[in-house]
Image 1 (cartoon, one colour):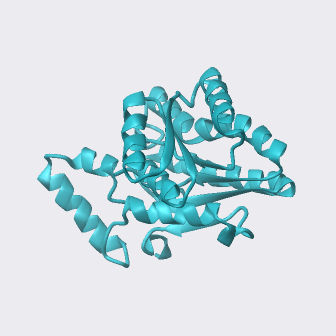
Image 2 (tube, rainbow, N blue to C red):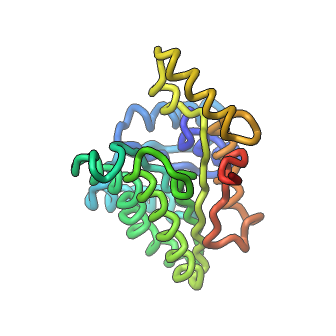
Length: 239
């Protein structure tokens, strides 16, 4: 289970009409089918959120189907490379684009729709990498930029009743993480050792726990949260 899929399912369980966007239609359809199997309402869309034309078509399709956009969860990301000396230009650019340009482009076209209806909530997926030293400097820098971009958006668009916040995951036992260590028992054990040694709660988080945080930030219970960074890291950043 990924953070995005878990969040889509959780929102649907709360009665939201969910639009699942993925660059691979089959993946979006798989999530939609999981939602529909539980009696929820969802539609799949294929789009590359790094392409302006795709994003415009995506937003137009959502508004055509539902009339408005109330909540946006920007959940695209990825990281490659290491330090500035050894990282090639292409993976650096790809990391910055995935983590940061995706938020810029989608928000660029969603915010006018939220302005039209007079309200909205945007949640951006950051990471504890923004606060801690790690080996993927491009990812660290991109996630730190996500937080700053979110705060600037919160300051300006909050005056238009559009709240913008970040969820900040720590070490999460997601589908992507499991894929990275699949079949490599040593890598799996090394990751578990890191979790035990560095996380005060002594375990990885789950995508469902991230989904609960995203749902909270989108809800009326978080109506005075704007520009906030909600840590969901088991205490990892306390050190």
